[in-house]
Image (cartoon, rainbow, N blue to C red):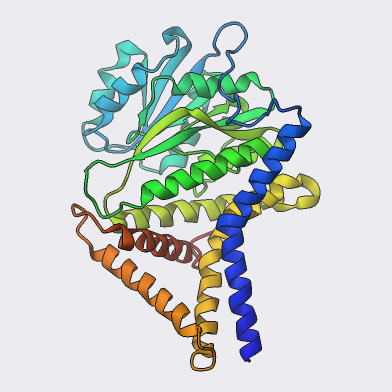
Length: 388
């Protein structure tokens, strides 16, 4: 039994290292190889994607903004979108009000003379349901999806749209920058994780295409956006998968900057992650055929490594804890592994109850965020929460 437990610990450690370190390192090597084979010109998002000017006129775009009770921020959001650098006669803004009960609709209507349209759903159905209902009313050749809580850099939309000058691009995603609403708050480690995730998406774009888009700001060719989705799915993830089915790729555009405010509370961030991962599992199950390496090759490996492996890490971690417990008293170093796990658990508990307006020390914030994220993945995978 000791040998079996040691194997479990070794394999689990190797799996976690591969998921968060080995996988991006492999992407980095593949990106270098592909760049050399293409003569050093590069095709990834970090090497010119979003820098090209489209031939002729800029394409017509529709900026889609789903909202629910965003009266506190909707005016600033619309002002921000109206100031982006894009020809006014080539863009419109469509706000999807998911049966808002506050002053959101009234504020949006006051912008009608500036090219902002309001579509109100009579009954709340969720973000994907609102996006489905809006499909017949989209006029743009490119659909730009964004969120009321973020702020879009003035050049970001042009950078995204310019990416479609490459006919192989079906989805173009922003480069997110995590910003804090307050100088001190409990959820201080989110910015680190966002930066890591943007780095991985950039590498994926250089190799074969990213497996998803940043929900806060991304652009899609109209034929891809026009497909109705089951309401449990998340369109930002599904868009990249739909593009791949059409032989197109999703790219992360480094110059398309979107400022995303951090959620100050770890409890609120946990609930957001549970919703996001639950929708992600639903979406991947819906398009599970893309995991077939014989049909989709390198993309299937990228999809499995980025999504499936990350979601499996906490499950593997539970097996590791059981194996370590079984080795206690027989292998000297096991006590250090159990102590490390105990420290992380304590950090998670402290972070969970930490007042959001107080700065959580970094030595506690990073492990607390990691514990929270893995617990959210476990929660989201509970049978009955997803169609799988």
